[in-house]
Structures are given as structure tokens and as C-alpha cells.
Image 1 (cartoon, rainbow, N blue to C red):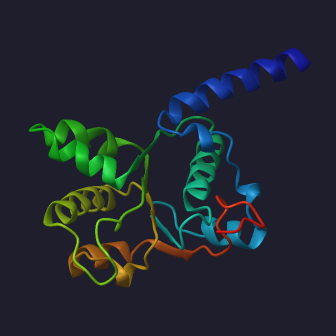
Image 2 (image 1 turned 30 degrees about the horizontal axis):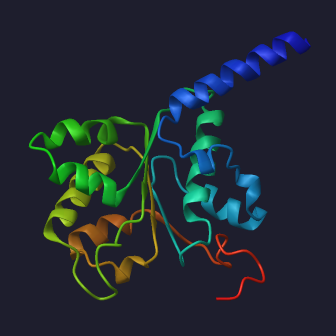
Length: 193
């Protein structure tokens, strides 16, 4: 039994690496148990196929939470779920630096779950995002909504504070919106500035 269990765990670890190819090393072992039970219940309360919009101040654990959620989904699906993760700025840069936009976008459109970190960082509060960023976000969100593929998004801004046009905001409002609060996890307790 121990040998069989060890083989299963090793196979599942290999499958997790395959299903989460973009998981940063920092969050490779992120678990939902790293958060309060009340918060986890809130995050898991989304409908099947529904996206998640997680927002809050810098450093409170948004990316950590999405990595934990992605890991949870893959384990729950017994490794039959493919998750891609990318920061919005990196994807936007990759799109701008190629003439083959759909080749760059295709993996993020076709994956079972897309984890899109840090949207809305291209502008200050109340200012408009660049047109290219709005076009990219519209393409991603539209296609994934139409094909019932969940997208998990993080931002430091509420949906109303994003600098995108109303069409994009309307689509993002269909997501489960959760605000995460707390202290900056990157700054050690007692650290003086």
C-alpha cells in the first residue's frame, strides 16, 4: 500500500507540473489552507465556468491565492485540467513584439483555466489604459466567456477603478468579485521604512 501511495503521489506531482507549466517557483506549493476558511469559502463559491476577479492592495496574497486555487482545481480534476498563468504586462509586451498575435494568444485562449495577474497596472487611478491593452483584454475575456472557460484575474484596483472602457468592465462584472485584505506579506513584521 505504501509503494502504491508513493507511486500515486509521484505521478500526481508530475501531472501537477504538466498542468501548471507557468507556476512560479514562489507559489509552487501554494495551498488554499494558507488562507482563512471564510476567505476560501468565498473564493470557491463561484459558479462552474465563472471567472474570479480578486483585488486588493499590493502584497496581500492575490497571486498566492490564484496559484493555490489553480493547484486546487487541478488536484480536484485529478490532473485533467490545464492551467496557464501570465502577468498582463508580460502578455501585452509579447503581443506588441510580434506580428503573429494569435500564435502568442492561442495557449491562453485554449487552456482550461487562465490565471491573469495584475491587470490595470498600466495607468494610475482614474486614468485610461492604453488602447492596445483594452483590445488584448477584450479578446481574452470575450473568447473565454463565450467558450465557458474560467479566467482568474488579479488587480490592485476595483473594477470601477480600472481604466478600461465600459464593454470590458461589463464583462468583468460577470466574474465572482472578491476583495482580499490584510497586511503586505512581502514586508516582514516590525520592518521600519
